[in-house]
Length: 348
Image 1 (tube, rainbow, N blue to C red):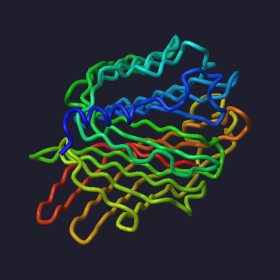
Image 2 (image 1 turned 45 degrees about the vertical axis):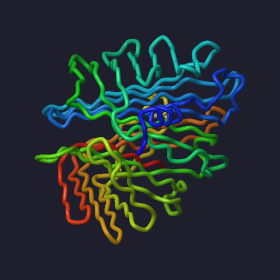
Image 3 (image 1 turned 90 degrees about the vertical axis):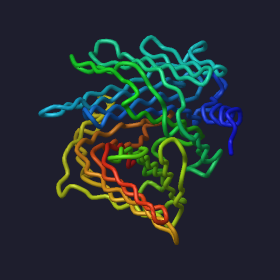
């Protein structure tokens, strides 16, 4: 059993900055990014935040994306994606701190502090969050495109703060589900790379919450992939991992193509003549000789974040989908079922 000290050390390993904190010291293809997801099933609010460091001397950048789903009739989707030149003094490794005029991200004494308010927009998040579940360090350097990628995750955070978009504000408290992961590696956007990813959280009628995290690294066409896996948490603890052939992902797509919302705006303009079919659902099934898990996700919100390479005209499109999901877990003779919210990604 992990001690508090060993768990704290693993959390530090998950969150440690890998990229050199000086922009001129980082190679052009190096990337470190911190990813947050917030879900509130009772109200329907959803949010994703990405903070990304891209190396490369004078071309080095600090990038961020903030997307907020505001429930209502109809629901509203608000988002912003921006980048600024990465200059000396913006990034500190220990303790972690990334700071620009619009952004501050810090991790110190096992606590995240996040503040993001794009200038000129009624869109903002301010968050304090600490780990509240089993930390996972998946890999330190698997092959990915011309380089490698590694990542770790905190599948549960206990968060407090505020979230606002276009005149509406809501308080973030212990009733929210908060997820965070940290990706790092060397590769170029626009290469023959891709992934399929999902986090889903549900609260059964009684008993602890159920959380699924799915990840599959692929080529750009999604025909060739690495080892898929599904992490299952019951309450705060990792209870099960399904790997490889034990796991299947099946996406459903719209019959017709259209122009989805895209960020940032300059890339949306560039791709203004490129419609695409949208995902409408996702079915995940996993089974081994003892246990089973399933997820059925109905997607009701979709946008694309266009990630340009900082050294060329190449780019990758990261589809961000969210909706309501039904989760089922069978552990031997025990069955846990619940409904909740989910975020999923599918790259192109």
